[in-house]
Amino acid sequence: MSSIGSGPGVGQGPNVEAATARRIGAAGARPVDNSTPAAPAPRATETMVTTQALDAGTMPVDSERVAQIKKALEENRYPVLPIKIGDALIAAGLLLQVRQ
Image: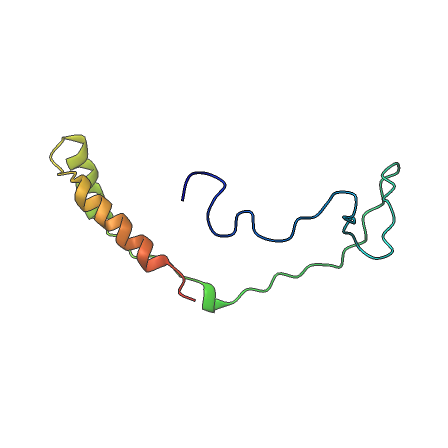
């Protein structure tokens, strides 16, 4: 294999001359007249349906622990370890992936 333009799928297929090629489009299609904008179609009244199945509820937060961590960060006493942070972000991303 040399460089760009070679390999499977490149250059494959029949050679077509421009004079014999036909334009592809919808059968019976007409050109669109954009001179006057069309009025928007009336919309039906939308109704929002809610369900408790999708409600995550309130998350438990330990406010005292949050305050301790904030204070430790301000005083440079809290260990910030990039490796642990990265691992936690990757793990969280894997947990949130939707399996199909």
